[in-house]
Image (cartoon, rainbow, N blue to C red; front, side, top):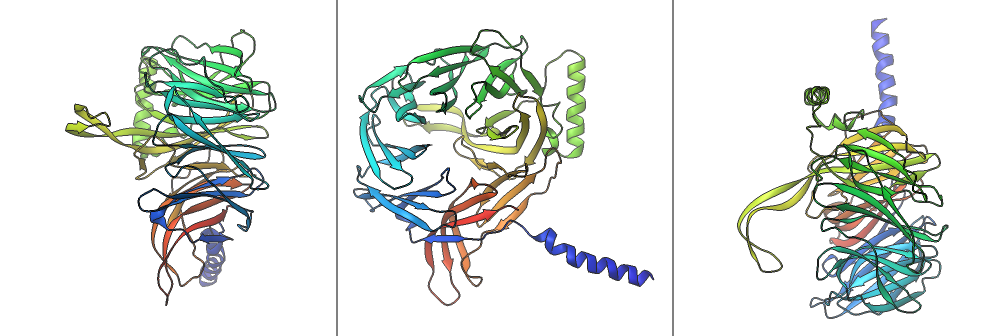
Length: 496
């Protein structure tokens, strides 16, 4: 009887194991014959479930270059392909999609010279125009509203962020009223085509206190509304994302701190009204979140929570010190998903650091930004917290403060957090507040089973449509009995 019971259990595990081991599907792979040494490439998900691949191919001396655009459908079949003739020293900076067009910004060696490319997503028809943006020497962000451009750039004299409007009909470039304080910056830029507005969220600081300001402009750069978001005495609003979509009732989802403006103490939500009637909004400290400290070992988490509870009871402020890099809000029918990467700077000591300005300096220099974990929160449309979750990150860092993970919501409500690591995709699927510490690996598949991936370069992954992501990058592939080939790959990844 005991033997029979063990046999039944063994057979059950044999049946269950494939289901447990089964990961996301990779139904389609596309390889493009691009030379890694001569090619820069970007992959862009379009609203119609297609993909746009931009790639620049140049010669060794960078004196000649072709700028290519190809559209692929949801099965990675090519729909059209075209090129644009612009200066060979042009380099891709940003893009923005306002259906039915995708717009690109290209910079040049002269930091005031920029080329804008307008691409019809349906036909592949291309137009380009050249502008001298005299006030700036760098572009940080780019939006389009009714064919006109809004650009956040760096003021070439004061080295502070500024907001530019480019009227594509009159070719007029104007500075818009925006940042005032020395330590002020932009937190978000969002176009709302249905309302005919563009919203700029500003984080204003004098080094001691900070506040948020929301400005809205029409398509021609005229200021429509200016709203200051007031705060509670013990809380300073640091950064925020404004809700996308067609709603006339906008919300801010962001972070707050206290005395030291470099560090975050929690998250807040608040409405952005067109009147001056103040509403406090909702505040959620990190100790209120169920899973924020789960990246720590259980004893460390318990000790941290016990220490913070004692500080709160004695009237002291929080002792934790976290820096957060916010992602764009992800809307769903009943609310929003908000994600943030938790990071800290890694330093190196230098006795002779020569910067771009050729100046000599001493002291610690930021070398990289190391991630500890990703925190993801679900909110109602009114800003009430539904759930929170976290995903510990191992050996994830970047030399610039840019997003290192991709976050996407599946149609069934689960959230995928994923990032590339050589020939693998490291991913984690969140189901509400149910915390799971383990990460899952997905091996990138080749065309044939007997092919071997010898190396992967510049890997990436983006959310695509529905429950699909796309992984991409350059690979050197070695077939069993043939010479190696170097290609640019696109692998569709479906999370069931």
